[in-house]
Length: 91
Figure 1 (spheres, rainbow, N blue to C red):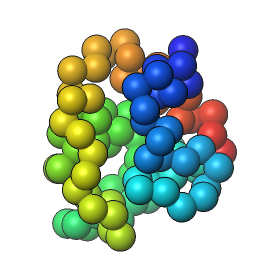
Figure 2: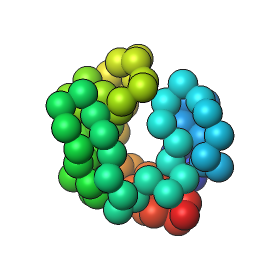
Figure 3: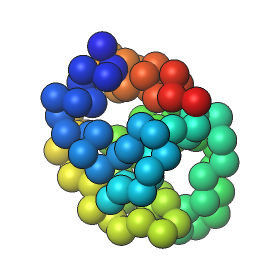
């Protein structure tokens, strides 16, 4: 379900799933790893990914611009959980 939500909402237009460069950080190998952002480092867990979807300007990943649309903040908790579950499969 998470892959379908990501694909149908354009998420994978900016976030690659294979490690290749794109407008946003890749999702491959993201979950559970450290992310360097504009104010430090954080582990990419459920809380971080949820915050990144709901408030994409909160922690801008180093090397990327603050371009993620705020419209994704309207995703339901279930949609976000599905996207996170999908990201967890992308090792």
